[in-house]
Length: 223
Image (cartoon, rainbow, N blue to C red; front, side):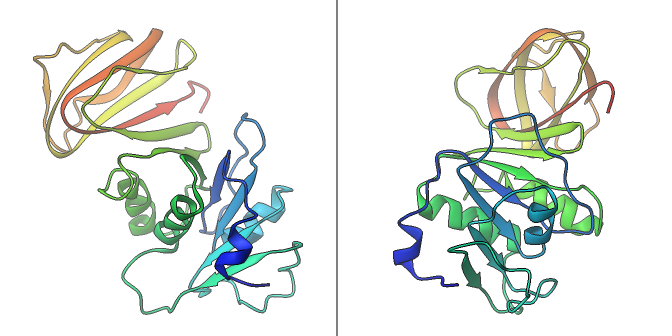
């Protein structure tokens, strides 16, 4: 078990999954299986419970001992950080993914545990280090992503799903199509308002952000 740069060169980041920590085992998304699995601390045990082979474990090991007998995956890379650190284990796992050459990441989280960790986990995908990357966070029947101004974003979402738009870091201007209550380019969502809560998908949604940062949460109606 090593964390040397030489070991990392053999990793294939084509489809990278990050398995987050917390007390609840995440659900598996209906996506192709990953080529690279990075566990954030006790996310290692969650990944193993899901039947996934883990390539990398990153964190301060406050929940998972670095000499845990279950750390048995062949060629497993362990990147240990001090507990007195300025970033979360999830942030470190995402950073490892980008340094390995990943161009997109799917984060799997159980969605339970400490509220502050859950909130920060969602905010992370919209910060300056990650906003230019493709990150989708999966939590049960929901998935979340952050968008910034740019070309229209076409969502592959089943009609009847719920779609919530939350403005982060300043008032956000956004236009949409394919929703029961579409927004025009002149419409503004104030930061942290509930204006964009629980819209209904009636077609294939297209979202265009003109200003600000937008957190998009899609939830299956059955979720």
